Image (cartoon, rainbow, N blue to C red; front, side, top):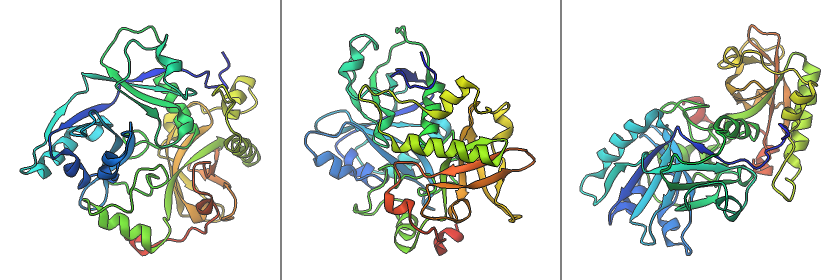
Length: 365
């Protein structure tokens, strides 16, 4: 098996917090609390199988983000799949706003298993041999289709699959897709910094919902100043740029027809052509500095033993050439390493080439 390929693996995600919301008022209740247009999803036929959404507090900060799926044709039952970091706080948040709504909220983490299958496009390719139960919900990842399938089965520990959960998160990092609780903190992060607008997680046409004012103000008054982006690392500026150029070519190349893709960073580690990260824990939370700028322009939020990670950066500083998808080399604090930021392939093309200017609402956030 080549480490440079996805090899179309399947794995369970164990660190998830699952809620079931049931009752006649569930769709209306969720409509007022999530960033996705639940009422529109409920009207679609056939019913949507999975959508991506955020849940905000009154200050417009993310309480959590995750996946939402109807469990019945009537859409009176919904499954909410989120990170456990603020799971209990989210339950209390939902109960606070339930009031007299006919909605039951229950924790069902022990009732369902969460699966991902990078490289697979159809569930028929998976269920024959790889998973023990038929999925009750299945869809291509609604954030970025290249991540493959995400599906849910009745809870089961009886399977013979190799555990590849960290491998999945490595590929998520390679594609530049952040997740709250792993790559940024809840209760402090904005929707746009976490890229929910680019990841199909926000409806700008739905009615009011909690925290909407901040989201709408940022959307309609200017461009976001900071975003979480993929970054590549190296001990020299030139090699960091070479890795970034190779990754950009990888982003622009479609996957093979069989779903497999070759990632230059993973293949390079096999070939020993690039230097990996010896101590990823020392790199996380490191500040990033642009040339001739004493002020930090970003911070590494997560990384791996491979020379790839995620960082929250000031777009104007990391990408002074606004038409380029590759940033300039940034120096890691108290380190001999350099980082180069990338604009991933799933960003809207007009925003990749757009000049990043700070908005008044974000400067004061």
